[in-house]
Image 1: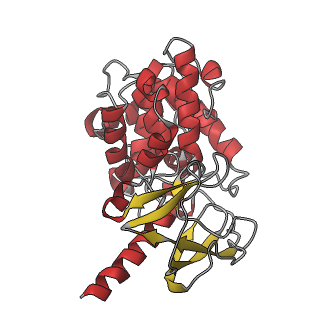
Image 2: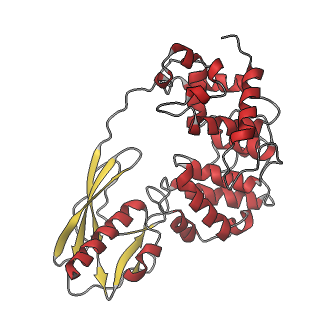
Image 3: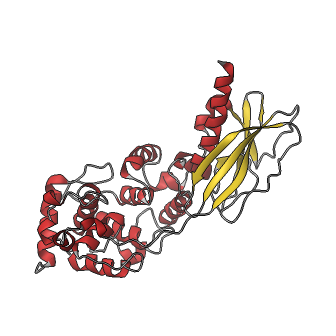
Length: 353
């Protein structure tokens, strides 16, 4: 098709001016850029997470920690607990590291993509997004939505992930110098609401007349995805140890999976292998059931064992704490262990009926 990059940008920005999503971290189209802190925080939260899931977390975070100084001074455990449920917990550790790095340079984010890349946890995408949206810099911002729009617009038929170089080049070709932040968000909104993975709404798309995939009659074919490899399934156990109305929770190591978060003790399962099956205390153990959870690189089947021994010594103060059952929902357990807690508590309620 004989369509210029200027035509594409103009059509998309005109559509965005009328249909932009209202989100708590955004400015209205054409308005001055939003607070870089809010842009950065939202982009970190949105990695591999939906907008609908992020909004309540974002609002709670910014109420509790409204700026870089407050977040940089926050307790690690409190931030990890507030993050619980969003998943991909390494993001929360990077969030704190970045906040502290920015605080160390006077509390101000650098305003260029190259300098933003030097901050902890800011990769190519996040640095570009903050540069464009918060500072109005021309930057090529490519998330999953932009990837899909560009692949369809130019019918890029090379399978992912190899296609990403061509997709980025296509996105670069149509990114304008003016209103770069609005353009990036317009591409995101178009992918989220019109150029969707399934059943794209081509009839109302502002780029429909310029889209090569639509002209071919099969837009859903793009982007072409590589065949997924099956995830291995690991098996392990978690241990529910209770006394005097409280359950034993431990703090996981600072680095690694679910790092620095409260959790139930477990038998050492990991992405690399099954758990040992060794229980941490002598006594009678009853199987409560099994919970399942899918991580990025593996699936886990974790049985939940409930201890019914007679005595239990105090845990090491640095490794464990007795958490009141009445406040288990406030412990900030990651999703996997929250599932286990719900399983035990549900069986407890059934037993009392």
